[in-house]
Image 1 (cartoon, rainbow, N blue to C red):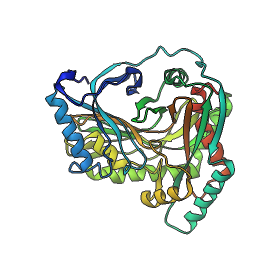
Image 2 (cartoon, one colour):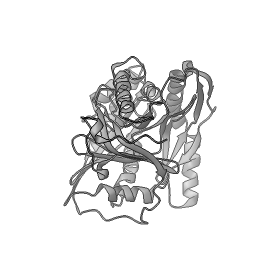
Image 3 (cartoon, rainbow, N blue to C red):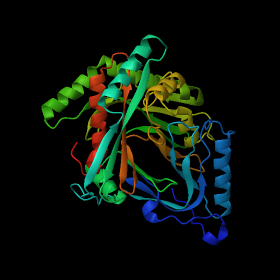
Image 4 (cartoon, helix red, strand yellow):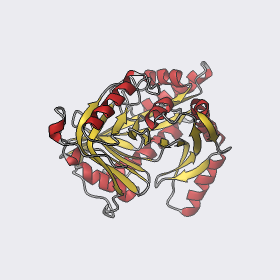
Length: 391
């Protein structure tokens, strides 16, 4: 995919973006790099699965403007928050190009400034109380799963170099969907997601939800035992089932064909084993875009819970912060409807000398508060190592 280049004198509202602050996204062996900004889109993505929604009409108008300015196949990039009623963080770039994935990441961690302060929000005891509260709620309502999250706030002695963090992520996590998103207030969202919400090309699509995890171990035998434990875990299969069932119910009516494995498989990142299901299908309507599909699925039970709206209300009640872009989605979609959106996990935000990291865990009635705290701390490890900090 390659878009045309816009000349700045053709568009009154073109903004120049520092290349260091530009969006990037990697998938497989290729990276999408963009420069310049034609139009920022902050319209909330609520109802975004509907082509007649305000959000999709805004996107369509932005594509039309880009075509008039010389782009043959414009593209929208960026992120949508956990709550689609909040402002989107999207834009039409001036120029976008796929290139070979950057493999020049240095081996070993790049040094960041001295860490002078850090804290968990909520702290350990408050998080465990929230897990207990959710479990009690399950026994008195029809909510069966809720995803609860934590933040780790880090303050460094000097401004943090986002490129250094990105280099560390690439060196330590050579696979996965790496992303970098500039936000309007000067903050940068950065991360490496293992979870594909949806990829669409032509009539074909793929969704690869993850739910249920176990820690990787340095010792190969211990690592295999953890993988085998996860593969046999009734609690984790129960949790995973909510996600796959929801995706199938959301997409099934749009398809002429839908392939869903009977059981999840195991995939791994450097930090975790995950239960994974590859859901593939063929759409009946070629005009349905990747962005519409992503809006239809978001948020899945993998990051919210089940049933979705009741789980969202429980999350609002027990979490002491707004998630913002965490557990939202990040990616791209072109004017032909092709695109990729991944779940915004294993991520953090950087603004000057302050870094905020995020992690979450799926809570079901069989959950243990101690185990869930351990899980979120393990998940924080990916971004902590990117900051040059031992977990």
